[in-house]
Image (cartoon, rainbow, N blue to C red; front, top):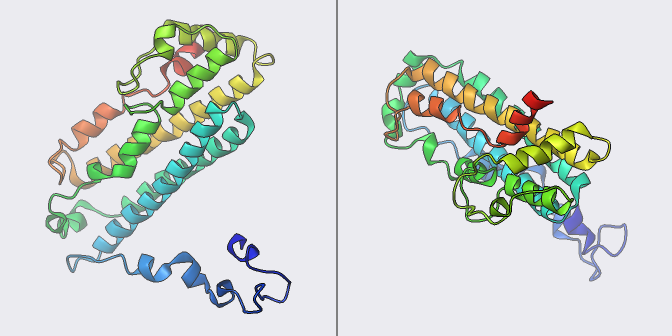
Length: 263
């Protein structure tokens, strides 16, 4: 482990002071903090399926934590014009979304009758209160106080010599992004000459992959909620399925989809 590397002076497992490092006494459970993780499931009812509900949401939050970690790295790399490692991190986020999509398949094994046995125990708690989900939405373009991954990509297009309206480069990033003709024209140039703009072309396809998986995640969320609670209001007071359906129309990287019609 990297932590041990800074204390080891020889291969005998001793530190420079001659004492064994703390990592020598570290177990698998210690390293992963399994005591805390495996004791974090505290059902509030006697319903059998509440454990499924808790574990599915907790594991989803862990995957979202990793997605945020990788998206943050991707944003830094794009801003630094370091695209090769950005392709790796962005691909990893797409695989994370694939895991999140698979989680809905497990939750859908719970029937409406089973969910109603513990729904009252949830009180006002709701998945809409997930701060990590909101942060992912912000990071990919649905309002933020700093540039989103798409803002950074558009700035990259400009730095690589493609013409982008100055108003887009200097836009208020706290407002959701709206499609722009100059951005569409820039992507059209990239797609018409991928050999010349290979890195930008590859980045575009990685972003499309990401949005493809993200759309599936949203769709699977809608389907699962409708299957389990129908059109009842959500526990957090939202309109439930109706609200989720409206989010399916949100497009994160509009010009990357528009340009396909023009090729």
